[in-house]
Image 1 (tube, rainbow, N blue to C red):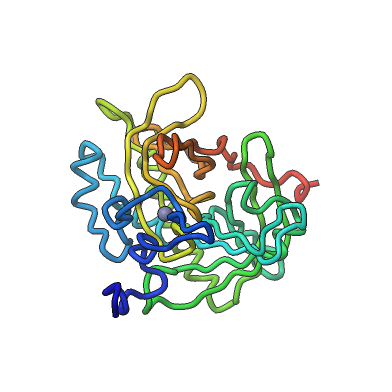
Image 2: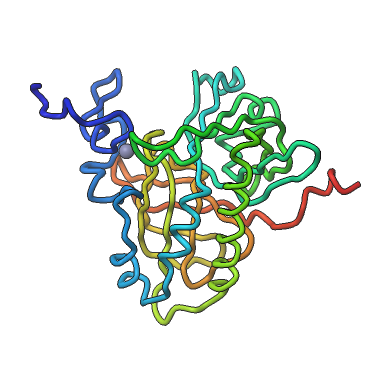
Length: 272
Ligand SMILES: [Zn+2]
């Protein structure tokens, strides 16, 4: 084939290097995505350890990978003028009533209300062509905060999958407890787990840019990364941060911001 990319499969990030929109512009400001994102199936952890001052963060990243999802919101609300929305998210809670549901954290601008939560499908383990297809069906929004750009919603899940998810969550929480608030010596690093352009799951890493409020970073992100799990290494909280927004100068990406902290507390509506 002329472009030499005939064998690049649909979720591979290299596809997006040459894709253009109707105005013949690159669909995003990034060139050579493969230099900025590491595919989770190729993630060994050795590079990240050097990068994060031997904080032994790779285990936490690997556990978070097993809980991270790609989101697709079909037919979002009319005023959004979009056919569908791609985003990312992470499972941080399982609600156990008669039929267990998983709770997914994402950005509010990805899933903006209860109506959109119902039209959201989450693909778990979407790491490569060979990955198992597990789809979580959005059911209800459980909590959200517009100003801090976060949303949590419950999803129905196949009963055959719930035990594996529960195990993934337990091992993740143990690792998270071990790493909570461990300080780094120098600069903080920020790791993002997400599905750029709705493709496979990738990891990107960068430096935190210290500001008075909010978590700001130069970690690469693209369309589809919104709602992806953010690990602020050296300041890890039990609560959750997800990728919220990116700022550009022309088409050069400058920095991104995380959502506000998504608290661990249960949805109060369910407790009353
Ligand atoms: Zn891109």
